[in-house]
Image 1: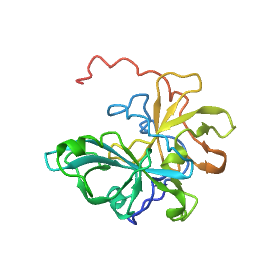
Image 2 (image 1 turned 90 degrees about the horizontal axis):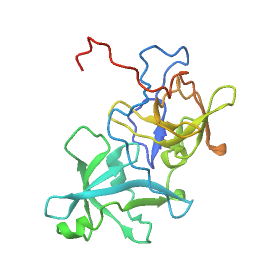
Image 3 (image 1 turned 45 degrees about the vertical axis):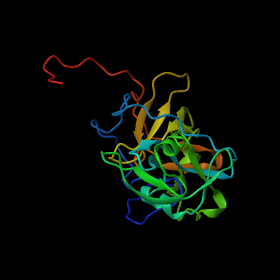
Image 4 (image 1 turned 90 degrees about the vertical axis):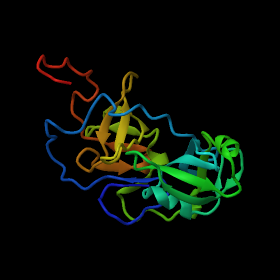
Length: 231
């Protein structure tokens, strides 16, 4: 899940939470951007059953001994190993024997070992395989600031007047906190908005809708660099 208030307690599921922050005027240097600071993430896999919640997705094989990269969508990335058997879209049941953080700066990328998987070829066969869990095996959100990542994807974002701002297409995290990636109503380039109470004051997951306080130029293309910009 995602949780807005900051906290060190491990969260289960693909929870994402808004970081506590006073709602008020958006600072000129606020972390909103029409460009992602890293390559655009691929769309999240769609659960084969609406009662399933996405917990993670395997990537490429790691080494020669059956280990595989795993992107975790749990609040505490390594907590994904504590859910026992996980389901795949084709009906298989897989259990993570061990996970550790992968080298690099991505806080949600792990190196995993899967029970019954040994050797590089078997690990390579897991590439792009998504892992799900029945929703009834997860604990209920502890407060109104918690929501499952899978429930955010596809939700609409409106302003305080109820005008459509865009659709949430991803919930990336590049190390500085969760972001909502929004696509404008008429299509085009996406923009990022911090998943904090200041920028996302209202969550209404029953209606698959969030209220956002976004700057007017959220989807504006980036301007030209100043002549003295060293970048």
